[in-house]
Image (tube, rainbow, N blue to C red; front, side, top):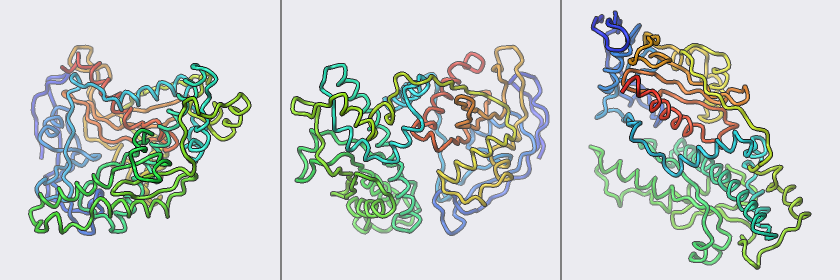
Length: 441
């Protein structure tokens, strides 16, 4: 199929683009891992395509994977996918998003240590034991130690959330939780001492908790209620929050070794307990001397092992925007990401599949024209590289179009998981759009 139309992005002729006839396809689903061909969509192969025409297709529900254009049959496919559209000029960051930005700034300033933070995350007992010892030598010292404890606590909750999500995926693969629904991400929160006093006996050691079982149960009920062939009532669903939390807690206890923390399900909640009672920094708290602070350091909460590193070396964060092309360093990072984060087998992550998915593009590049209609980088397909001190840590695959920035995929170095690079990249992309709205209002 060939079409010739006019352009409005930098030149007055869109030129020729070539797209093969579309077909209706059925395939296995990479989201719910269904055994049958339950993913239903229309697909076409594009040899070349202008950014204006792809923008029009995007606005009509089409997307691209490499040079393949596809549009899901939303009413029939097993896992409908919805594009998240955001008007960048109206965006206001949430508290969590601001926290991600501040964490990255601390990291760049040398206040967040890479290796030592990872070591602490791998052994949450470090903070469970050592961070109970809070210095009360003076307001300044106390504030410093409390800041260290807070930062370490953030890393531990991130780590626990990641482990819970991995176990949920394992439960789905084993059939304990149905594959047919898109489940929410788990979040583990630190439990304040004021709340633990209101709980049942034994809760004085409760440190962290997650309510993901309630969210999963609600998602399953909602999916059943809107399914056309759903005939069972809510009472027919055996997966109550209590049962789900018990399954997850049991799997966590078997599959994940978290030193210093025990895991139990309690009335639908997944709780993490310490062996010793948590103390608070009041007048009855333990007072740490300078020698005791050194001992704390050996356990993991001093500057040596904690996330706080006031006098650390500043780091250089660079974000490079380059046209889509194969880069061996990017492929090595992608391969490591897919294997470690998504549990792909090495055989599944080939160079050819990577090229087809994230390098190949039918979009005809538009070079900057010097006027106010094209941004300085031009239009087309790009890879946005995040480089820290010369080391590639993440790559965002994006299409820059006349009316939007389309974010296709993002992969990152698993060693930097605690920086929440996915969230950080989204904030950077929003910022880029705001800066370039003058060219594409």
